Image (cartoon, rainbow, N blue to C red; front, top):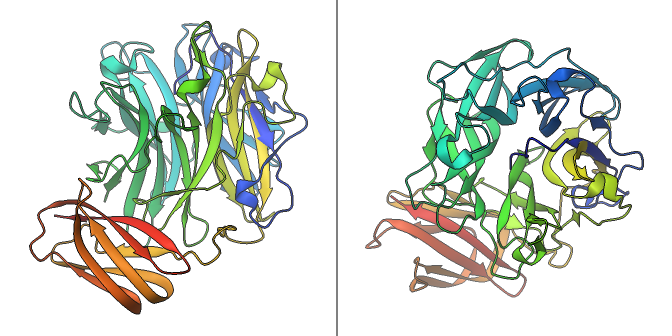
Length: 432
């Protein structure tokens, strides 16, 4: 979420212990924060929403910085060789629009992606400063060096949905993955519901990075039932794919942590989920990974966070690095860091026999295949429609692949359960 202009953002660091499930085990860096506001005017009031890219031996970061000159946020840039010591560019690199333009009020939640043409920056913009429900949208800028940017002539390239939709109030916080093999962009983003004010995560895809199509299964990462750790807000996602799985880290909070006196949430958590296709996500069983009061806790650094995680996988050191924002005191925002050694791809420790399922094509036109990563023995497949009715059931399955057919099923979203004595897997598919 965007930060109030009276806050100052800080970046903190996490360092993870030597556990083979490293991307889920994080330890705060002992000397957080690693980036603070100022001292120059362009980010003197606040900094926030970091996005990073690792190139050669350099970690590059773009973030939102609020200028003391007009109290508006712009996109700024910094770089580091170790993720701890940072050098800021001498000024902001993407400016707010001129009067009357779609992004003249505020820029925020930047996301960087590198493709064959250079750098693409997706960012939040509005016309009425900090009033996202009025005019929020996502825009695109391109660059050959990451410092000099040109805004796309078709901006904004992604806008909020219709009134009453799950993302009908506003959209922000994009995270984008470019599939160079399929030549497709995937964008996960925050959507805010008009009626309940819930924040959830949706998916859109594009062949050119400009024209986007929402996935009909949206939202793809949803809030939990009442009383859960993420029952009201989950968002500001970051997604990478270092191996065969998409990995997502996101911030979340619950209704139980809302403080009516301060009108804010006392506890914010960082959570983790994985996906084969970017549509069906499995939340980690030990979520949240860490939260506001995870030790070492310092109220001057950690209060109000961790929010807006940004994660990269550093192949040179074989570790994950995470930066996030938080604020302490009355008006202090900073960035903090964490790292996590990676010695193995994540495995479900409580259910080591769990399978990974891929459904293709999805959406289905006439038939689709459910493919497992190992032989299913004596399995049962149950398919349900949106109201929970069983529309198909197959038993005694002994195969790596299961063919499913549209037959007489109407268009829509379906949930399936594949189970045997060793595992239970859940997924979704769509019939066009």
